[in-house]
Image (cartoon, rainbow, N blue to C red; front, side, top):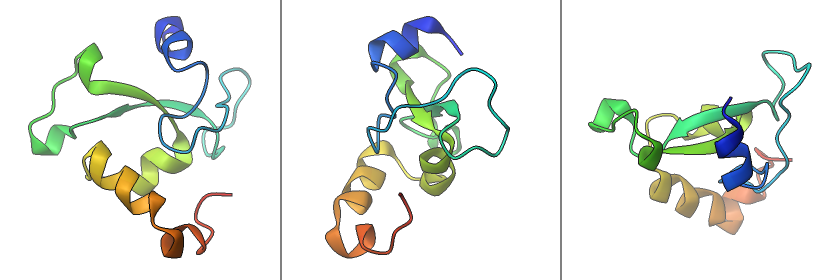
Length: 87
């Protein structure tokens, strides 16, 4: 995980704004730091710095093949948030 992404996003998930974990983290830790494609590769997104954001594992998995703006709208919905998919 590049230091530049941690610095750019201040160590927080782009989506839920929780601090992500980088060191000594289990693979399935929901707050494990991952890089996520703003435009998924499945929709033509590239592996470029402009198309990558810092994300926690939980948000990255929940986002799936959605574009970042679609996922942000989804998690901003109070009804969706009340379902507790993000602690």
